[in-house]
Image (cartoon, rainbow, N blue to C red; front, side):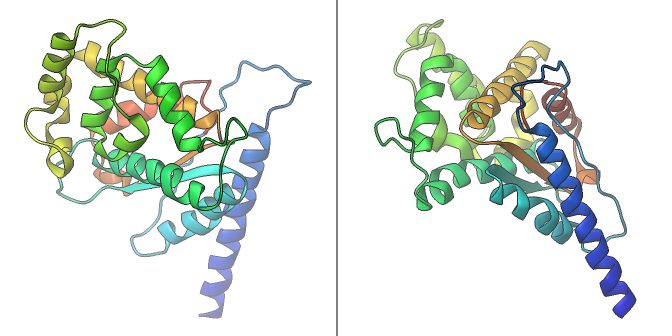
Length: 241
């Protein structure tokens, strides 16, 4: 037992040192310019029940939060056929952290006393097309509070926006939505647009924090849609995550 406990402590220390080095390397250096991506991908494998999730929470989640990063997690479940389910849960966690936890700690901007959640929402409202906002609201309903709604669209008429919303949202919302998300998104162009919208959203969030750390648990039960989205995020060199 003592040897097992020592190994667990050593693994936790290793994880903490790894994340500390990773986050330090992502700190902006005004004296250096680099074209390298700021995004990092860490894969943790091991036998079921050995404490991998707890290790990530202690070794990655807690240090990340303490250093000003947003830590958001989601978990896949065996035989639960919901594409993007764990990523959707992680996005819900991210939105909750922004709207509840951070503001609970007094996280307000110096710009007119507005909360960071309000600043993020305003930036989305000003920069996103209505169709993109509605798409994100339907695919990731837990983010609705930071996405808000737009009364007008920069590129589409009101009737077209309503038609788009119906196309994205028909078939339900909440827990049923992930199961239908690929059909609702349609072809490659719509999926690529969703990927781009998610990356833009993460960039806006990162502009108010050191970065974003997404923990996707039980990745062995993941789906192609999630893997494609994660690949899109990791390959984007402008997201400090």
